[in-house]
Amino acid sequence: MKRLFLLFSLIVSFVCGLCAQAKYVFYFIGDGMGANQVMATEMYQAAIEKRIGVKKLTMTQFPYSGQLSTFSASHRITDSSAAGTCLASGVKTTNGKEGVDPNDNKVRNIAEILKEEGWGIGVASSVSIDHATPGAFYAHVPSRSDYYTIGKQLASSNYAFVGGASFLKPFNVNQSNDDDLFTLCKKSGYTFVRGEEEFNKQYKTLDKIILIPANEALDDKLSSSGMLTYAIDKQKGHMTLPQIVESGIKQLKKHENFFFMCEGGAIDWACHSNDAATTIHEIIEFDEAIQIAYKFYLQHADETLIVVTADHETGGMALGNGHGLSLELLQNQKMSSGVLNDKIKNLFAQNHHPTWEMVKQILTESLGFYVAVEISEREDAYLQSIYKKMLLGEDNDVKTLYNNISELSNSAVQLLNQKSGIGWTTSGHTASPVPLFAIGKGAESFAGWHDNSQVFSLILKAIREN
Image 1 (tube, helix red, strand yellow):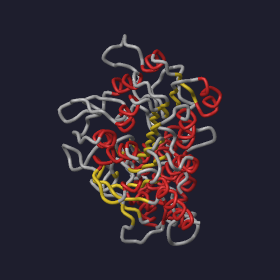
Image 2 (cartoon, rainbow, N blue to C red):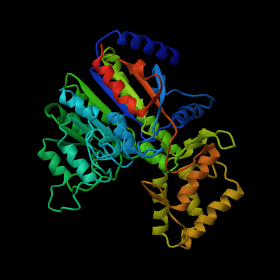
Image 3 (cartoon, rainbow, N blue to C red):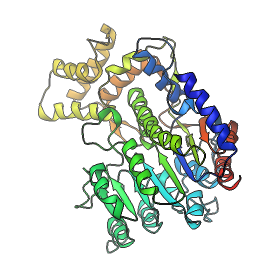
Image 4 (cartoon, rainbow, N blue to C red):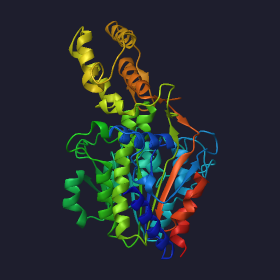
């Protein structure tokens, strides 16, 4: 089946090269997604089928692939705003800047260019819609931390579809009398739609939509938690990235041409926490969103381009730490390190002196420790030593870019990583090259090694040239 998929894709892509320009463009950006994150996911999927090898993702079966270098104008290791700006506009900028060059001059991004030409534009993410990567496709600010101004510029973008985890900071903390971002977006003609079910009831009559999860506190105008629920933590009713992409296509199909950027932003958050199992589940969900676009491509193969890449790698993930790879052990992790953290902290909050057996039970249920995952006496003693520090209030939270995790929760997840053979070099970004995959009209231009500043022009080439 895999060979047939590849052969079919190559034939269709060749035929597409003989046809008209791309009319439908999908631009998928896996934030923090390096080559090893992709490979870990494919090897994990094979491992849980009890075999050595890989189970291919949709993106890795695209007929053209390559790699991108990611340095910014100011640093060898980029941040998301500089990388997002470069992927959106082709312009290298300083870390921390969004949609402007190093001298704070506004740069035009591909979404804005195509919007001026009458295209329908969609921007989506699994994190907040005012975050660095989605913001790079509509905002122009000297600082990525100016979330209110970024959101304000979204309100005036006039894009047809926006989807994600609401706004991170919907209020202007410097001017309390200013309208919040919900109000500004409504004044600009946007309708907030909560959840896929409500979207399907309303989208046919709406010109501009902002799709957020059904559980967002829209009526209270509270800020977003920052992200959709991690895939590993999702329960029935939680919005998924594939649902957002499917909804976005329905809305954008109202236009003769459309451009749709979708970010797997929570991949980066999981990598910042060095949480391998959560990272893998995020990439699986990201790939499922790509599958939705691929199904659309099969219906419009001569007019569609799908590009998949990343803004940078996060965590310095290594496949192998001197003890081989036992990725099947990661299937025993049933929740993200953040949810595990909440469970452990709640236990200590509800019980003055919880016993080790009570903590041990959580580790068994959450990570499979002591049952599915063998824990040595030395490892048990190590975990108990941290538990005793918690009893005395002497433990220290581990601070990541987007989370604070108890020492016990973090140590337990890192122990599972270690036993699985996953290593990490940092909780930050790295300069590792990132993968690039493409299929459809003009996809052949994406093969090989490129700098991230070239993707912008390659997409425009696929749109402009016959």
